[in-house]
Length: 119
Image (cartoon, rainbow, N blue to C red):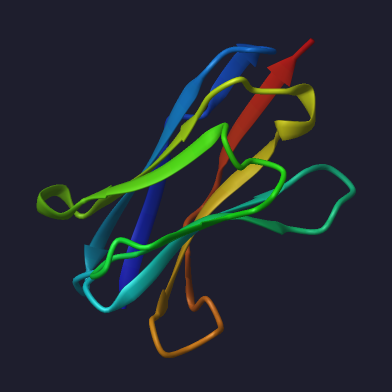
């Protein structure tokens, strides 16, 4: 079992920045892929970014490429999402998730953190 706790959401003006954190506890994240998803009101949850805990390889949704950066701190068992040049359409609840590297389904989810971007 991996427990995930997000933090760092808030209210920001368009063009601003926020950094989300996802602290993992329980089973070590090694061998997992960690990801951020988001869900805006009335929309389906969508993939934002992922990082392989062991290899450090990353992947991004086209809508956030060049603006968001996912990273990890092995010593703190924490994954970050640095969000720059935020836009109103980035407004959503952001969720941290984890899956074993050889699975496709994300089995572990955090409770979510709200990000609101005003124009």
